[in-house]
Length: 261
Image (spheres, rainbow, N blue to C red):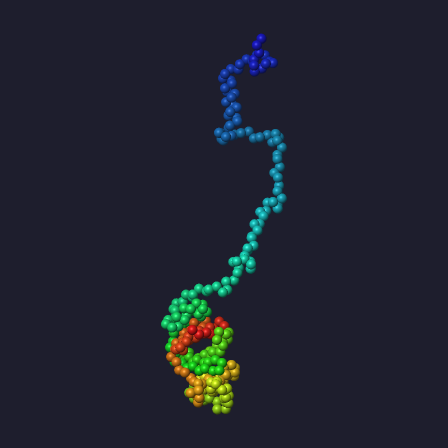
């Protein structure tokens, strides 16, 4: 007797009615896919006794706290190229509302001049002044500002100063009691300064010591050599340009040094 290949050890299976097989298949598909394709259908809640609840793991508070992001320390230090001081590098030419003109302007264009003096703070003024040379320096008068400039060592710090000109025509010209030293052979004649220069020289013992006596030429043996000049002056942020009709004096106030051009 021939056995059914689907159930070799059992008796022959009787085929189920076709309608019943199709209905069973449809019920299977609907029950498996109802949650996906038919969300409105009410599903039976799962049996709580079917599976024990899985406890939710609890993380340590340390793991729940975000680790702070470290801020990197600046990488620039004294040895890095960015931290190297730029002293000595050329400074840019200052941007000024006005620039000096004529001879003073030509001197100011020099980089060594304008980087130290800065911008002008006043207009250029004409000067009708006087000049007198001493053993160790000289004086220039600036009537427009009522000042007397005193020059000592050129290019040295504290090498010049500005003093108020207080001379009045009624002031004595000189000190008759002053004893003028006799110069060595071949040396210029030494005389006592008079006028406005003489007053400043007599009233300031420190200047008198540093400058020495006024110097006169041999043909002018009986009087000191005071020269008059027509020049110009202009004030700057950090100094003065002063022209005595012959040379231009650059007076710096950052270290009170001076030079000539």
